[in-house]
Length: 92
Length: 197
Image 1 (tube, one colour):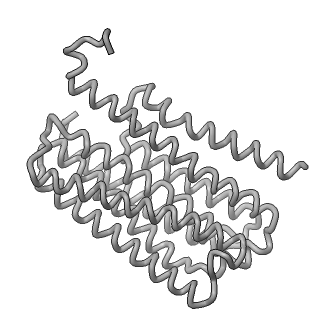
Image 2 (cartoon, rainbow over the protein chains, first blue to last red; image 1 turned 120 degrees about the vertical axis):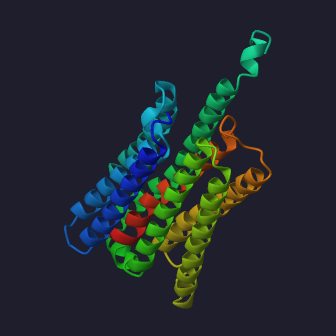
Image 3 (cartoon, one colour; image 1 turned 180 degrees about the vertical axis):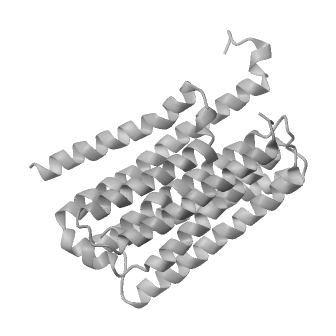
C-alpha cells in the first residue's frame, strides 16, 4: 500500500473511463435488433462493468481467499435459485 | 468468547477484517433479495415476451443512461473518498462524500421525474406485470439509494468530528462497499428494464 497515491487515483479514473465507455456501448447496441442476442450482449456488458466495480472499486482484487469466498457464494446461490426456478417453470 | 486472546480481541486489524466479512455477508443477503425479483423478471419475461418488448419501449432510455452515468460517477467519488481517508486526508474525504450524496440526490431527482411521467401516462405498478416489476425493482433500489445517502452522511459528519484517522477508518471503508453495491444493482437493472426488450 501507499506506493504512489497518484497511481491509485489514475487507476480509479481508468476504471471510471472504462465504465463510461461500456455504458455508451450497451446503449448503442440496444438500438440494433439482434433478437435474443440483445439480452445476451446486455448481460455480458453489465457483468463486465460489475466485475470492474467489484475488483477495483470494492478492492476485491487485493483481498484474501476468504473475502472472495464471501463475495462469490451469494452468486452461486443466485444462479441455483434462477436456474432451479426456470427449469421448473419452463419444463412443466 | 473465553478462548479469544485479549490482545487479539482488541487488535484493530482483526476488527477491520471481521467488519469486512460482516458487510460482505450482508451484501450476500442483498444479492438474494434482489435476486428473487430478478428471478421473477426472468420467469415472466419468458412467459410474456411480446408484452415485455412492447412495455420496455415506454421507458426513457436517455434518462436511464443519464442516471447510469450519475451512479457510476458517484461510485468514483466514493472510492476517491476512501482513498483520501487511507492517506489521512479527512477534509478531502468529506468533499468526495459530499459530492457523492449530491449525485445520489440527482439520481433520485431523475427517478422522480421518470415516475411522474409514468403516472401521468397512466402507467402504475398495477398496470401489468412489466410495470409491477419495474416499480418494485427501481423502488427497492431507490430505497437503497436513500439508505446509502444516510450512511454516507453519517460518515461525513463523523469525519468532521475527527472520529477517523489513517489507522482507524473502518466505517469509511464499509460505507464505500455498500455504495458500490447500490451501483452494482443498477448496472444490471438498467439494461434489463430499459435496454433489452
